[in-house]
Image (cartoon, rainbow, N blue to C red; front, top):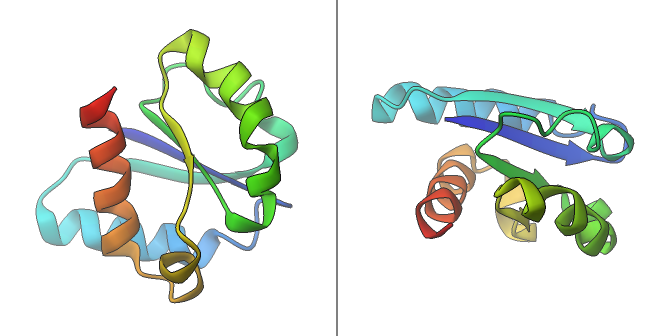
Length: 102
C-alpha cells in the first residue's frame, strides 16, 4: 500500500510518518509512507493508494479531491486528535479503511 501525507511544507508530518511506519511493521503490513507539501499533490499522487491531508491544510480538501478522485484515490483529512498525538497506528488504520472503502 502506498500512502502519501500532504501538509503545509512536508516537514510537520515527518514524525507521524515514522510512527505510521513503526505501526505498519508491528501489524506486518507492507506500506510505503511518505510526506510532501500540499503544493506537490498534483505530481505526487500517481500510483498511490491513499492521500491524507494534515489538519492544517484540511481547507484544501476539495482541491485534493479534484486531483485524487479521477484517479480513484481516496483522500481525507487526518483526524486532528490522531495527528496531534502522533498516533501512527490510528492514522495507519484510517488509511487502510479509506482504501478498503474505495
